[in-house]
Length: 206
Image 1 (cartoon, one colour):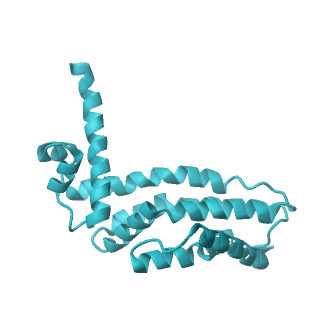
Image 2 (cartoon, rainbow, N blue to C red):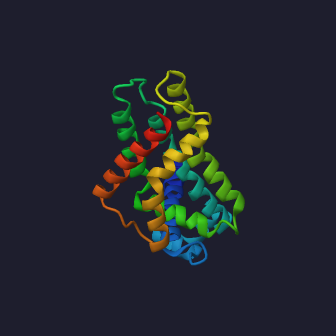
């Protein structure tokens, strides 16, 4: 019996995390109660408090846990071959996967949730940005510098170029989603934003 206790505890912890994520995204921070989370996780409120001292700590953990998903994105942007003939095609493939990942409904919901609570939890918002999107931009900047060193791109400021690349892709779909409350794009829209964004980027930096 005792040997199973850590496993049960881990499963309850995970159930609480998943329930909290769902409730916070649906109701926002202020609208969420520990009772809501306990009910959805099918545990007692005492169990929730045993794993997390208060709602603020639970909110922080679920937000920062999502930065783990960035690892695959970091690997993606680091892996652009130095092939002049295939540069536009390679950037298009990267851009489309990048755009698709960052416009997933749950990612957009989480972004909105963090922005809505940025004044109340500025350190949390900063940590999420630094461990998440900023890591991707830094890796993309290093990749662009490598391509520039090999003569495929021209730039004085690789990090600024990485921000330009991301902005060209994300400005329309993300802003629409932030202001309207839900994704407004189709897959065809994302294809269009990808192709147009890469063309604009290469016009400036190749």
